[in-house]
Image (cartoon, rainbow, N blue to C red; front, top):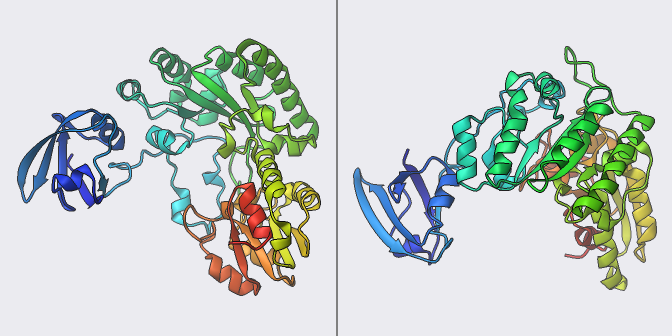
Length: 432
């Protein structure tokens, strides 16, 4: 279907062609544009024929440009089509565990391989047909991020709640043959897909290397809103250690064979096992950082680098509060002791999650209401609030309270802190 143009970048090829908002892109080189993936692929060529619809008439444009040079068009939809929603009924689905008061936008279950390519979100591929899989290969959509969970296809179909879950290994082998690379994740549930099942999963995916670039191991996330759902539980310390032991065995084997650790447990497993986070070099290129793999180590490494170059005497003195999820409190306290700022006192404040329940202990899922409760009665010059608590590119928490509203309730100025270590140091020193 024709795609509506909403903006034309100044100085771009599109402006030179006198394209304008309201025009509709009909085709590129005679091919209709299904979505952003098609648009990127078709407009990457040097010689292009465009068909534009304007005022009910079609206008043809022919042009030459550099390979991959953008046209400078913005469309009325990021994907240029609707988001493909999840068709699964996963036994561990986090959306199914949301409290009744959660906003509707949190309940949208997307499972769109195009977003995986664009943003690194994980997909199951259960809603990908054979023809769509061929389009992934034809468009060279790589790398993708795939939720594998297990390579026992009968078990995977059970865990995902759909028989299409059993098609995955055929899909992955076809992707490998087509030159598509992917990163994998396994959300592990105690007694279900760990133990021997995890050993099989690692072995099967390692056999797909280098198409399969890495495997992240993530413990199942459980809220206190699981009425009527599958009986699952959190990892006990000895169980978390068993996962890490299995991963370490394979890391040694695969580092020798392929030059990569390949298997990367998330930070949560090390915290649950009460084992130290691996060193910086262990995480290689931090390919699964958004999955909570190496996030703590990267923060510490970046903070250490920035601290060594900082003019600490330029810091603005004062008392700061740093509210965080309860699982990361010891780590954050150790950072504050290791990297002191003259004249600055920083209190790390553990905040229990009242929105999802105390089983959820990560910082990124704290809400505005949690901060209001957790900081009640506290006094300070400012509060450091990490942006991982906020909606992407917005100052809004998961419970729809804004940063300003929460600041007003707490009664202390808030400072929004970026995710990098140098940004944390700037906030600690109160530097712009």
